[in-house]
Image 1 (cartoon, rainbow, N blue to C red):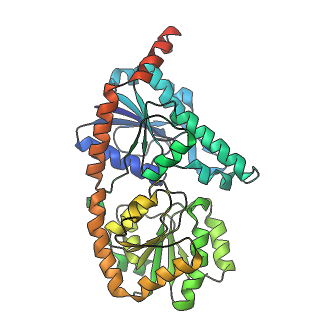
Image 2: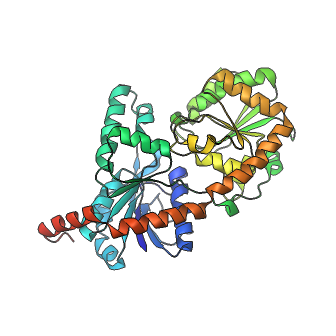
Length: 403
């Protein structure tokens, strides 16, 4: 099949959506599918080493979030004639901003079914970025926004069963399939924790915690810093390595100083994914994660694939990963309980090693190939039943030529 994907974010912008798109595109290609991804240009034209099958759209910087870019709908629709010639079988939208509206418009004009992956639960984080609007209003707006968008699709993909339940509570009624992003195990092998420690001036035997992810307010890293204060009472030499960048970086640096943690927290920024990030994961004795907003929690699986035991809260999308109780200690989002779980692991090498081995065995259940096969089967079913696309195509024809 030929699949047209659209997303408001993609590499070099590093986040879970970019990783998910890249993983599925690679695996779907191995299954014989062809994909074209429409994504923003991040300045300076398309990267010289960009992947094949990507159409970069000139985009504008977003004032409140300089990491992201905003595409223009009209620039995307200019490509309609060439997209029509490609004879796609369906449209897969990945994000709910310009990409969503472009995907809906292209679906109508090309007479193709449209599916969208719901990667982000907006009600749980919008108020961090618009603090002057009451939280209850922002939640209500986010729910109505998601309900309207999702119900204008032929089908929906969600990465966890918890997200499907949330969307049903919103009033989303379209067919919804749970298909997590898989882990490319062959790309998550090796990693040299000793090399990372040497580069970062971390003593070989120093007890080290690692957190990987976008450094954003909704990731609840503030909580981890307060937990670290408690862990330090039992293990004075403990260090927390925070890998990533984002809008909460300066806030967290100030908080670390205020809590007296300047010697216990190391911010290392984004790490190159093919080697440096693997080294970073492997440098940790324990991977820690306390986000309340994850629709899946890919970093948990990445840590597990590298044999690093996890302490995390099983909330929303992370429940599907953590509920089996393999390779991890599940903690409550209370500072005392979270700290106690971390101390238990740091003080018990045998337990760390057992959970690390268990994690590597367990993560095979999340292999990317399996998830891509499920997506391929879902595409096949959707392609056979395209009622909304057919209706939209009739409407578009009735309004006259649009290209």
